Image (cartoon, rainbow, N blue to C red; front, side, top):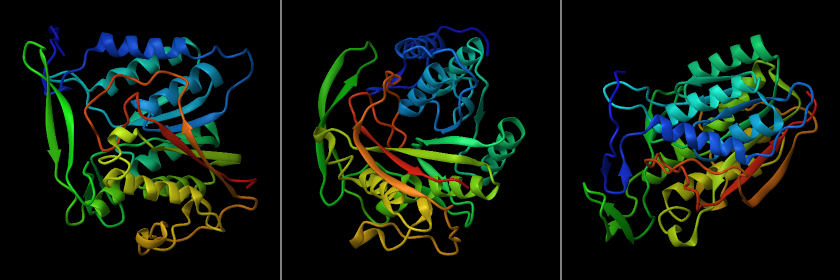
Length: 333
């Protein structure tokens, strides 16, 4: 991209362009906020799905700086062209630069984490470069997901459930002058809840584990963690009690359901017993002996500072919001 002056361009309180220098500074500040790694051998092999923003970015940077992780980060960002790239594109470039500077063997892949093609690419890279995987962090927020089995594309929405939601919002005019206004969001209708759950629930997390386990790429003691949304009471009506909250209930149930299927135990119906429905045609793969589930750690916060706020992508929490960490442990294979 040719040289250009990047001036703030916004719609309401959402800024549409990203500044590479600002994104690089954000990543550098996050790295500096993490306690330094003690000298030692190679760190564990980790896969971070959703490594370019929010707590996925924080987990990636903390893992690199503190634990010396090796492995792969997966994100889906737009490269610069006629306009600037997305903030996540520049943050990923800055993270990769710091990883190389500190001698970390970290590879970043840009593509659709929901696709089987990306799962195959990651699995091939793990096998060729690292051998087996010790950790998988799942921190994905997205506007849509295409089911690789059926080809159906689902779209997530940010809506309340049952009744409209009214709140105040901040608008900035062309000169940057702020104005506080009130907005109303209509409640979910039709299959909005099911569509959002299909995008933001636990189905893709389960597919990742099944795919990697099927390739025999999970190390002894492998652990996976998903970041779920708790949120502030101020926004509960549209977040935790809304369509996004329904999807997070599905994600949390994926981790909480013990039994022979491990993280992939998706039995029962989403409505009524809080356990999500296993899609038709999906096989159930027994977990290795000794598999068990650790209950979620509520109000968990990342040590590193989250990145700057960005355009909403179906559940990416801002810095004032809380996440809960859902872990599933597998025993010796």
